[in-house]
Length: 324
Image (cartoon, helix red, strand yellow):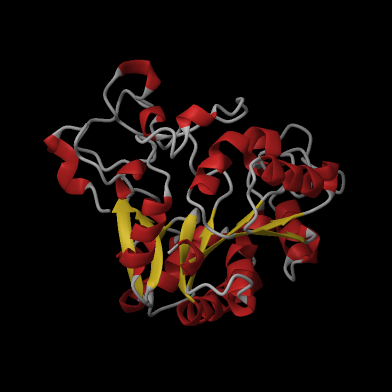
């Protein structure tokens, strides 16, 4: 089953004070949660670059973990076709100047790397077309998705910038939910449609939707951390995404991949297989170790419940929200 899927991801180091923008988190920050992806035993394609020896250090880490099913592609983010347009729009929004983040502007305003986010589906489509591991389905997955802010520690969520303790990962830790079983469930659940995840509480970009009269703003907000499917459906969604992206940027809208994916979804609901959640933060009982936000009650569909498949250690009160 494992080789039927290829995961595509990316690792780039870019700081919020730079023109590019980003959170400034490198491989050392992401090693622990990234190892959860490795535990799923899925072939990986990783886009990165040579900045700060990132590609070299990444390859060394994979060899340390005895992981062999991977392909590293070095690609400059600035090679993206909309690169200059993104920079220009950020300048017009008074976020950056020719040196980087403008003086007096909060780093929060420049924490998202538009170059990376918009290229996710481009890279996914590229690898689905090349198919280096002869897979049937392809999924974009954020490099550090499985961290403990959105997945409880007791289920395998890992803090950033910590030393790897192999006893906490599958298969040594049977309670860790990130295993080949999860990959198999993802493969089966998506069928022949485009798999994506809806955040029910995210605000809608109505101005962007107004450019597409046939779209339905309330259809759902699609997140960018995990999506994909077969070669054909990825190609179809990619073409729609590229069209919407070109239109919104021609209209000088600085948008990330998520609102663009949401517009595409609104016009192609029948071609998608979705899961949904209400709140990013988790609500597991057990005190400070597991509970990520004390304001979240157990009847709220937290993000991790989209994936969690074992009701044995949780209350029946929210078992009916668990999808896989």
